Length: 360
Image (cartoon, rainbow, N blue to C red):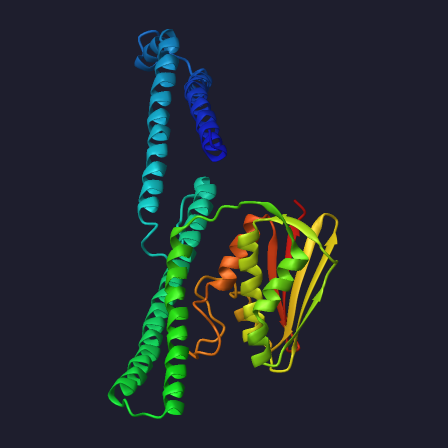
């Protein structure tokens, strides 16, 4: 039985017992006072009041019993009705949880705990509804933006291929230039299409872990090597600080995805000519991995939302940086599946991501 229900139950039982006891006490008190008062006078046997008093005295047990039954019945009806009144108020308030969200639920003082719980449910529900609407709006905006972005490179590809078809006598140099542009735009188009598939996979699949042992040092070196063209393009350098041939247990494929997302994020949001530093240490059976780069300081309000689905730091639809806004959200989910944590920090034009994982 709920604590609050027990309290109401015990309170009503005590009131009922008190009422049942009080009623006969009142009758006996009235009889005693009447006898004292009437005893101050001289009465004859044929006086009406004397006859009535004697009759009442002879029926005192009956009057006391009737008073007890009547009092118990009246009080019982009153207190039995009360819980139904409370139940009606609770049901009415529960049915109106989706309405008048700005108004708090008010109950009698005896239902204070129920009032607090329902108000907490209402506030939590309102917060969840608002978050769901914001997430849906971000997703809708993202799809609109991606649809627009898909059209732009596709138009360019069609345009340059049409030029090549319509002008067979075009110079070889110009032909190569048009083909290179068409190829670049096609690759960009492929990236955008992959983002659509990423959204579908992220929403419909449940991630599970397939743990195995891996040489983390070599994994990070390999991922770094794959980023070499992007690093060269932005004149960035990469420094890895960790023990040689460091072994760890994890889901290799998914952790590669985490590091790929972190490094890509670091490249996209680094100043040209800067340095990306990755540090790996182990302390108290916990693996600490930090990725730090030089870039524009991220405001606190954006830093707090950086791991949300479909959230992008650059709201402008530039093609140079930013994706679907899923990379860091997926990284966070993968890290948490490994019973780890991931945090982001930014100050003084430095951005730092820290991952902490248990040693499996």
